Length: 163
Image (tube, rainbow, N blue to C red; front, side):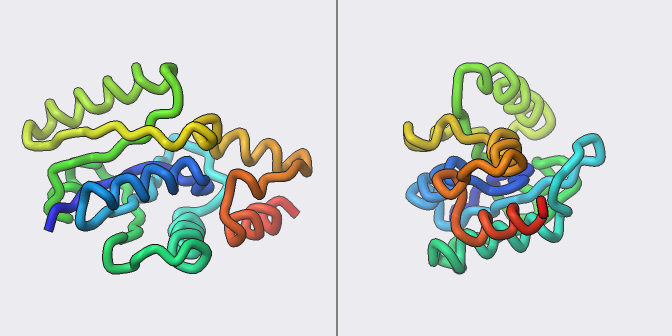
């Protein structure tokens, strides 16, 4: 079984993230969606909330295959997560050229840490490339419409969190 790790903060998960997950499922037998817990970041949702939101979005809203997707929290190096799940591929999403420099450096560092790890970059569909969790949270805080960017359960969780 070929497994890939898709790490991210997913605060919250958007249709852009979901596009990358769906594309990954066309390539790999199993995708581990790994919600990162980084002490240097200020999250709107806790790690437990983010894992629950991802699961609800993928399995309840979209009815994706639970046998092919694993959702986990993590607070270690991504390469350690790869070892734990016997994966040698990390999936990273790219939205714009501005993402590339950071992602390129990250891929290089992971390769230096473990030469058996490859990073694959996937782009979401054109209509979802502009979506970022940061902008979605800002739109929601200003009471704008966010249902074009998030699944139904995520919209509800975000609105409840901001009330």
